[in-house]
Length: 153
Image 1 (tube, rainbow, N blue to C red):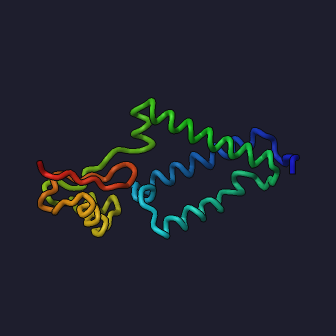
Image 2 (image 1 turned 180 degrees about the horizontal axis):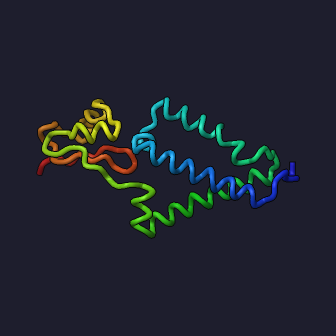
Image 3 (image 1 turned 90 degrees about the horizontal axis):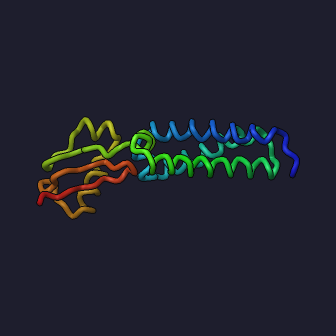
């Protein structure tokens, strides 16, 4: 329980590699994956967690090893948040930027398809903004996956 099978630094390296690879994979999967979980998305997150657990621990079941991995993941998350807050370039790289998906009552079909948005998502965003399509000035897909609708003045 207290004796580790691996050297302490290997837990940190493993956590770093898994964190960075998963961060890249989630970033590449698109904004809607992060912003709006469907039951399928939740299932993927749970399976991702299970699939990388041995990669993090290297088969070590010690208490100390698990705590080292947990501390490393929390430290990495804090470092990424700090980098994003202090550097616009890093924020754009890690979080992306809002995407214009529509203007003057029309959604841009190519952009909507690229962003993997469903028509139902667009309609829901219009309803949430209490806006008719004809009254829409601009629509944006935000970095967190939300759709923001701006009404005409």
